[in-house]
Image 1 (tube, one colour):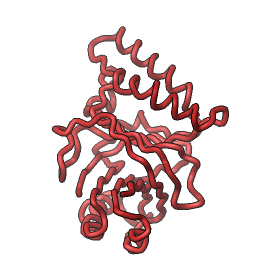
Image 2 (cartoon, one colour):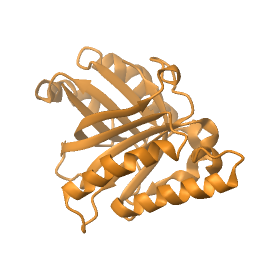
Image 3 (spheres, one colour):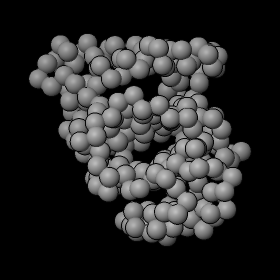
Image 4 (tube, helix red, strand yellow):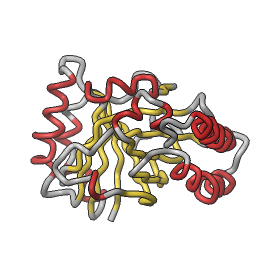
Length: 230
């Protein structure tokens, strides 16, 4: 079983709504015989309040990110050729998935997931080796990420390999889902509603950890609407 993450950029001639309809309606019909799971994340108008959370060092950011699981990329590659012809640009990554946190009640199949989904693409700072990077991420930062924030889904995707030789040197992809109000209210985001002291504490703990393993000049943070389709 393999999991693939695709960054997708729409054709210039397509509106975002047209692209969204293609992803949510046409794409599942195209892929239903090839994939065992399909999740579609779209940077649409429903997450416009989260504009302040966007971080983009490789502009323009993708219009959508899709996550799918397949028996083998060896067979899927040919099945997906028609799909790739409908997008302007695609970057794909085979990943190893770790589901750290998941609230099934807010994550129903066939519906838009509650709140919003924040997708983060990370590169390894040059002053760290891979072992040091993963040691900090998994043995230090993970606990902080779920204790200082209001996320109800937290998925870590370690990149095994990229599928295009033009891709950025991302080492991991994080997906976190937050309540709706966390789009624009830091106190909700940091699980400290109506508690300024806790907000300051959680923000500081989180940022102290992030600065130890994240190069903020090589990061992509993309708020999205999340749909589990298959």
